[in-house]
Image 1 (cartoon, rainbow, N blue to C red):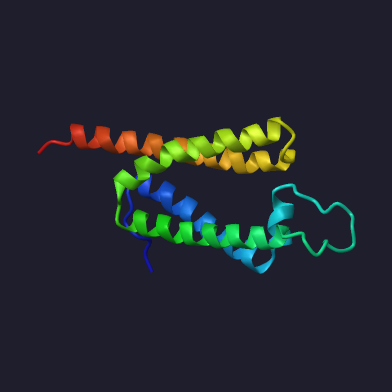
Image 2: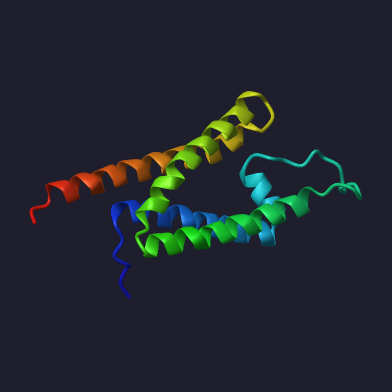
Length: 141
């Protein structure tokens, strides 16, 4: 089996898509595992209150993550560079919002890893897109 022929930018999108898909699957199967991986720890109570819908919210977010992973993988397979470029701005926005949540003590410090993943992925995609454009311009016809 050989790996698909993807552009460098396509590989950055595929990596993000695969991570989103896998983390979405984990969140659907075990939402507490996903919460713990981001630094959200239980408050020590033995059971959740009847009106605590945290795990429902995590599972619905995980479903969205799973679906988004599929979308990203399909975009990578089709080398849809317009989609790649579109994701850069929104992933940088996500980095900014998530970092702000940590800096304002709204989210635990472990959540900064999620912000860093978003920011680093956006920058990697941006760099790969620019390199791809330069290569096309320099390529003799």
